Amino acid sequence: MFREKLKREIEVIKNNGLYRFLREKGDNILDFSSNDYLCLSKHPEVIEAVKEGLKYGTGSTGSRLTSGNINHQRLEEKIAEFKETERSLVYSSGYATNVGVISALCKKGDLILSDKLNHASIIDGCRLSKADVLIYNHCDVEHLYNLIEENWKKFNNLFIITDGVFSMDGDIAPLKDLKKIADEFNAILIIDDAHGTGVLGNGKGSLKHFNLKPSDNIIQIGTLSKAIGGLGGFVCGIEEVIEYLINTSRSFIFSTALPPHVVEGCTKAFEIIERGDVVKKLQKNIKIANEIFKKNGFIKNNNLTPIYPFIFKEKTMEIAEHLIKNNIFCVGIRYPTVPKGSERIRVSINVGHKKEDFELLCEKIKEAC
Image (cartoon, rainbow, N blue to C red; front, side, top):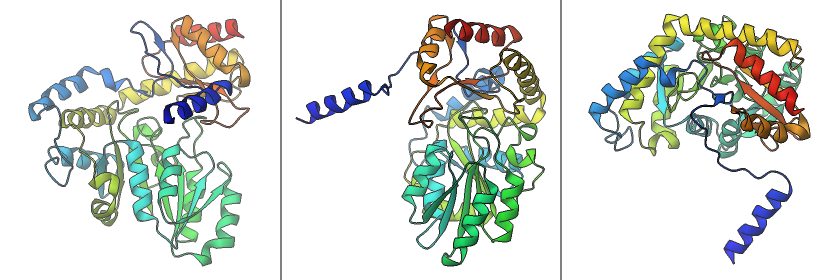
């Protein structure tokens, strides 16, 4: 009976054109979907660091508070230094970080103000918290200000939560304005910099991009699985925030710690980013992509990040299939990941791409259209 119920529901998903399935990515394929912006997942130095880390074994065998605290604190010290904060804390994934941080810090009697296009992990963290939640229009500083002005006296604490770089559009949150509002209303600003770390501000992230310094009312969240090329997530800020999360954040306390060889690889990746060369190479590729994508009519304005949304609406999945058939991996993104009517090919570029790769992508998209 349960099986039949699930079959019917799956059929509804298929009939609505929303069916998802797992697709293998071949070896000899041009990849425009990966978040490995700096190609550090395959960097020789990172791979050597991972091999060295295998001396600890293939897994950490327990949570950080039991047997799993092996080499993790060295990575946390490196992240705190990299982000110029007092301390950092590593989680098992970026998703677990957002869910764990938000649900631990935001309580009943508090108010969260969340950008309309925030990542699903932020949304779920807000849902798990006991705080009230108000959604402000995407990057709309005036709307945010009005919401706070109308409501701030009713609550104990205010939290403004935003992506640093938005994963589906590639645009950057107006952090200078958000910081001003946070300061004015004594609010905490939480920035999920998953797509900004390793990309903006010489790799230091969105905060550095705006020449903003970390402060007591800023909490930075990030992932180790995108530009860092590994696995996991992190939060960094003042000492007291990290100490509090170690004691209260359920997705940290009750998760097995990252495998130690992954930790070694991520530590090496941060060291490579600090040298600066690989970040400069990414920015150079973004400029090249801007020229080619503008010339072909897919974008109007220059990008600062490696994420390009090509909006094709109902034609999106058809175009994505055509690209796959031509050995270009560039998946279509549709509802509910993005709003209806904004279905898109999400093009994600990296340091390994060449000018001719961008030209070939444009040629095959036009062919499909």
